[in-house]
Image (spheres, rainbow, N blue to C red):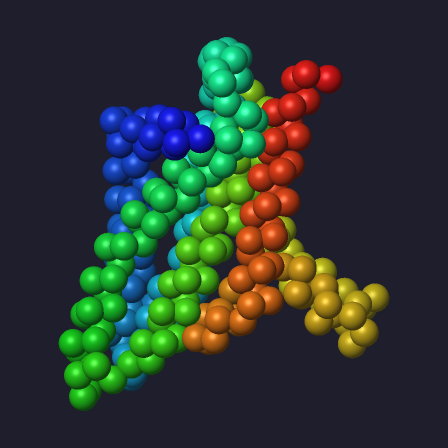
Length: 243
């Protein structure tokens, strides 16, 4: 597993993939938070990073599938997947190694945004007048959301040889699990009856809960369970070559 992890990390940063991913994320968040007046932090009357945590999931919904689409699809297309599985590694070790490498890249993309926190901290009146607990909870929630999107993207990549198909499938599934269940809960058949239960299946419900600064065990268990389900699906997809 460790060898796969290092292999993926090296492939990210020996090429331009890692730098492009981090650069694109920082470019979009920087423009939204400091340039465009609709979201600009400078236009708000109080110190907050709420705008970052509102737009980051939307950016991740496209950026993370772009990271994961090559993980298995490219290896299937080039035939290197056969070389990979002949190594003394179990399928779950391959999946987890790739998952941790992609998740670490998401963490690397988030770390520079701590500069935004420092800036708002210094610009507050009085200095430091912001809810640090809620911001910390939002960062944890965003990292867990990123891990969930990575697991979804890996499953999509393992189902096809075409990277574009893997990207589109991952974007679709990320959208469904983030916003889809909220939309489904508004249907007449659920509204006023079990709409809250349907919403709890979606990511947005638990992400919003953690973003309030309260780390509820149920939310954390939900995210890790979601990651586990999709990673197991990815493992089953790899094992299907033996069927």
